[in-house]
Amino acid sequence: MLHDLVTCPLFFMSALKPLHFLLRWPLSALMAWTGTWALFLFVLSPRLPLLFAVALATSTGVLCSVMAGTFWRRLAIAAGFPLSLLLSGSITLPAWAWLLPLLLILLIYPMNAWRDAPLFPTPSEALRQLEQHAPLKPQAKILDAGCGLGHGLIALRLAYPDAQLVGIEWSWPLRILTALRCPWAKIRQGDIWKADWRSYDMVYLFQRPESMPRAVAKARAELKPGAWLVSLEFVALELQAQASVQTVEGKPVWLYQAPFLLADEKNKSIKPSPSAQKKKK
Ligand SMILES: C[S@@+](CC[C@H](N)C(=O)[O-])C[C@H]1O[C@@H](n2cnc3c(N)ncnc32)[C@H](O)[C@@H]1O
Image (tube, rainbow, N blue to C red; front, top):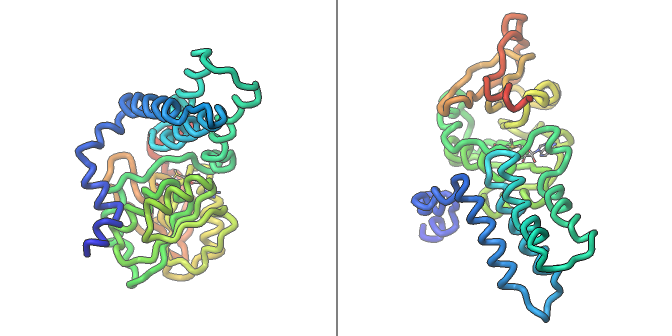
């Protein structure tokens, strides 16, 4: 029991709830910049290569950036340390060394993941009522396709505490961080479009409106009868939803069960939510 409490990230998250204000913008950025500078000055030593201290502080800044909610905030957090170091003129590095932050950003946010869906987390309460509309057998297998930092897995675990949860994520650093955050889930690095969905009882997606036709085609080809395709926010225009639930404003959850019913023309006129349209631009 004690072991469960110590290892359970949900317990830690609730224990740290009073400190969640530190993650709010712009305090989160100030904390990240101060932290990266403190780390840089701490590891700076004549015995270590200067580049090591720069790389360590820069990668810490990039890792902190994944917690920010928008692209520009992430960029501000990730670029804060290297940019202020460059402007301070306090060190001289070869020109190529300034490509390092860019490489790190590309490692965390790979380009093809941006095309399919950038990192936006599932709100923890968004999947609360899922179980009432899509009951699953004990030990059912659920895939979070593109699991990011594990927020979707955490929300799925709240809805289905005894399910076997699997996450696939394209970005290696996010895959490693999610494995640490969600030790109760199986996380692997990979491409959700190349993965085999046939063994899953539910595939959960929080991608982009543009990715939905591809997800529908894959789900129709691979999901077994009775299995669910669940999409946060973005509707599958080609299919008729069995249900749609909304516990968090602006974040409807669309549920489709195989064998899928095709949408009639009327359903095709369903528009994505306003926030979905905003993200599209
Ligand atoms: C909007 S986030 C959702 C994260 C998580 N599912 C959640 O709900 O909190 C989408 C994630 O999908 C990942 N992703 C996008 N395309 C992918 C692909 N083809 N294969 C694997 N992961 C992908 C992105 O890197 C990003 O972390």
